[in-house]
Image (cartoon, rainbow, N blue to C red):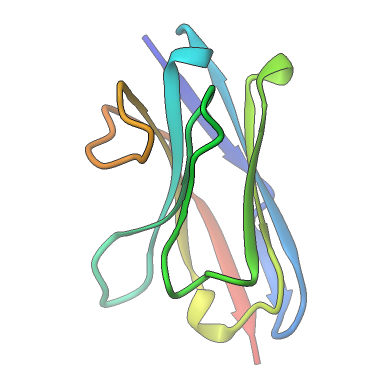
Length: 121
């Protein structure tokens, strides 16, 4: 019922920047908190950022804190993740996710297909 589509992934150089987008459709978008997860090779999937649709509550994992910004545009039903000072360790598949009734995404019900981010050194 809720479809999430990520875009903006690709190849970037270490120290560069990348902006990921997640377009949502099929639901009451303002009712969902949105999160970005990533899964690097050999590692568990981790929540790296989340944002509540109405309350403006944000969360950042330590791995990206200080160099990433999550934002939303409810008029466009889109969530963004701006990543700066990219590191090779940021190489992963990035997933967009949605969850209702929590300001910080914890157990999302809906997931996007993922977008690959590769950072070269």
